[in-house]
Length: 125
Image 1 (cartoon, helix red, strand yellow):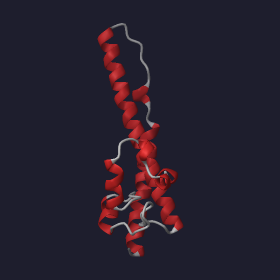
Image 2 (image 1 turned 30 degrees about the vertical axis):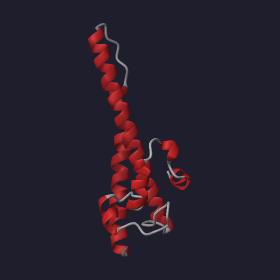
Image 3 (image 1 turned 90 degrees about the vertical axis):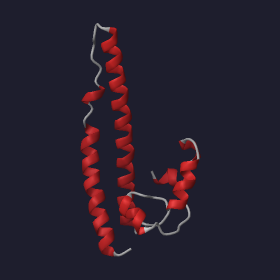
Image 4 (image 1 turned 90 degrees about the horizontal axis):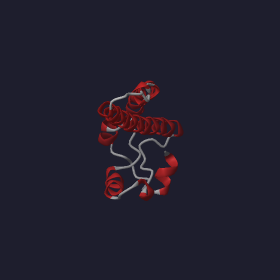
């Protein structure tokens, strides 16, 4: 992968970090409001749960983007954390924060639960 391509992806990742940082700061949707009506309380609880899941997902994406920027700084960007093989430039163009090659990612996706993540990948997060 050329320096120009890495620089372009780095700028994309930096913009993504800013966007996600701002997104994870907005937490008004998880504020608990008091309501006398049962139906309204249940709706608010459901809305709050959805907002929490969204916040958790955005936080995970932020950690992935920051980890990718760290790998760029270390000179290991574009190398699979699991098998040490190069990650396809097409994959990085589609998912700039990708830490695994497509083969290793498919292997991880086949497993159930975070407890099965490879040790090296868990340490990179």
